[in-house]
Image (tube, rainbow, N blue to C red):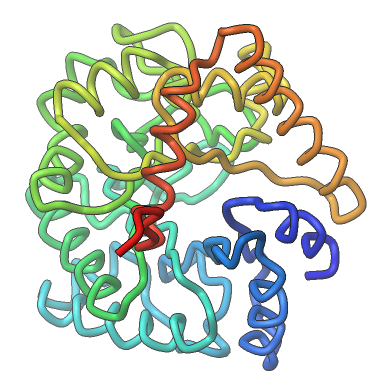
Length: 314
């Protein structure tokens, strides 16, 4: 926590908890950390508690089966109850955002380097994935935790894991008939946040979706009329580097095309340096006109809305 304390005091929008076991005093640590927040607006405290292979704090909140196992052995109502129970414990520990559920369609053996989803996916069937994914998300909302559906517009059956390699999704013509459907349903259902994928979408755009104007602005913002928070997958990913972007440049590009919040990772000793370079890149982009003040202000509004913070006097 010490590595990010200064950045929280400077106003970063959120922090992410990684690892496989949470400290028993997590609540106290997070309370001390968020108490340093600039202007009293606490950062989002995020983790990706999905169940199965991706669980960061099961020792505090209880273990969950994988999404695939949930869909095979439970009803959507039972999944909602489970997510509400785990979400309540997450909230009690100070975590406010869960980077879950995965709405991608997949039936592979992953997650691994060649199959990013695998058992993280509820099903290869879009109806099943939608029903179970939205049940999980609603359970988190019941608990006061913001769910983030991912990885838009559909990472299922991608060619590789974007963390370790450049990757391509199913062709856009296929995604529109299948993989996009759970995300369309999530937007219609009023889900508050969407994460974009760092994979490229053949037939839609040449850049990773997180950096793509067509994917984020034209499809998610305009075609689906999503008005909530758009978060990128980690811009530290090899797929982003393979597209020719380092983290600061990728941040600016993501904001320009419609993202509101960017994720990135760095070793503890480099958190401050990377964060400062990102901030400088944003400031320079606004000064040069390549990132408009209106777009940046819109991103801030979406972040504050997700935090349930209003800057308007009551």
